[in-house]
Length: 411
Image (tube, rainbow, N blue to C red):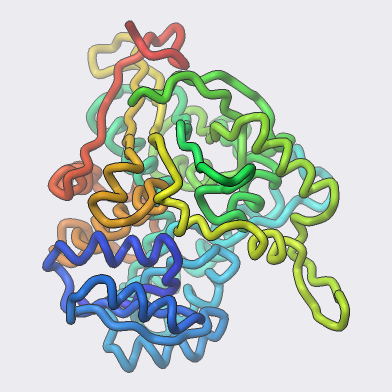
């Protein structure tokens, strides 16, 4: 397998660091608009299978040319999702398998943004599904940790744990702290603003997809791994789009443990218009306010040595178990920052995101996963993925919960 990874930021660099211990690929090229960043990432690996390239990810033609020059089998998109359209289209033109970790962006309903969806996450990619399937090519979308591993958990629960699923509820929380910064997001602030300030999406069988106000339906969820109770709120996320397409259930939600301080900052950015992606002219230069915010904050990839704590990604599934009794299960994956820094020199959040596309690429390389069209992770058998994740040294866990009170850990 020959791979082009587009984006040598935190996640793209972590992909390479994790992949270096595996032998499923022949060559992996890290491509980035900032050539020195890609070069530095490759130099740290000391592995001749890796190379770097300068690439403008907004230039579809340049992506096709690089893929063809490298004889790439796979293009892995490790960029912010506003760059999905040219990368996705280029992969199709180049005849490559495509993977990403976030889907094309949504657009609000013009009249009822907090009641009905407009253009949903991934709609632009699903619109091309027939073309990809007819060509016999695979676009595996949303194969990070959330979406990604969370979707794999939903598939596993449906196949092996439940007779009937009432709700698939993805819940994300952490105990991470960053020393020396009053405000320092541990993941792309561009993407965080996008998903947290957009109207959250919910799916119900009888109602279909609908939206609510940002930060709605707060709940206190008790996370494992020593993280404990964290208040979680609804945000927009791909699982709510993906899971209902392949998993039989009644309801799908996504809630994120943000914390009051983080929510206050996001609300302030929104109040001041600093979350906008519309460019303004400032002293003769056109710049988007959100890009300024991202540039002003520390690069999440550089925060590892200042971070402590753990992060947990997981899927709470409720319904009727295989024994026909009520059941509630939280399938989850906990990562400790100290461990990921020691293993690969990568902070926990980007590492936890990056390991999943690497596992997926190995499954595709061996033929354990195969398909055509625009598919989500839950379209595939979960068992090979979870087994290989464990082989990588990063096992998931399954926590039984009280079906009468699934937000709290049993016992």
